[in-house]
Length: 122
Image 1: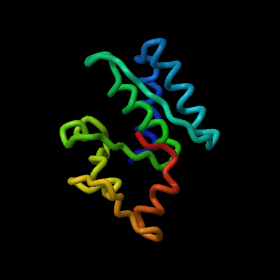
Image 2: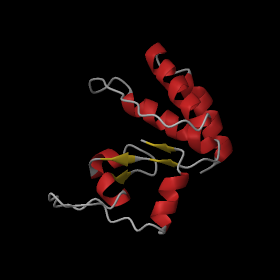
Image 3: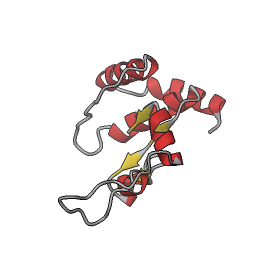
């Protein structure tokens, strides 16, 4: 990613967020920058700016040279997120799920290492 370009776009995009989105952005980024683990739920009807917020968050984390993974439930949704992947692909979730199904991420694999060092997963 072009760090300087990301930083500029984040600055511009932040001021395009509404008040609630800015509050969510600040809270989430503070959590990421403080290396604190947390889970956030962003909800709203279609067209209310969730994807714009997600992309602004991804850009902010990446502009700090940290790893941010963009994961979605469908291939179509991944197209809206820079570097997006389906959850099934990213986390090696089997397509057919059974009672004893597990993700097939090997303990010492590159993917396991990536997940351990990722600062942000959306």
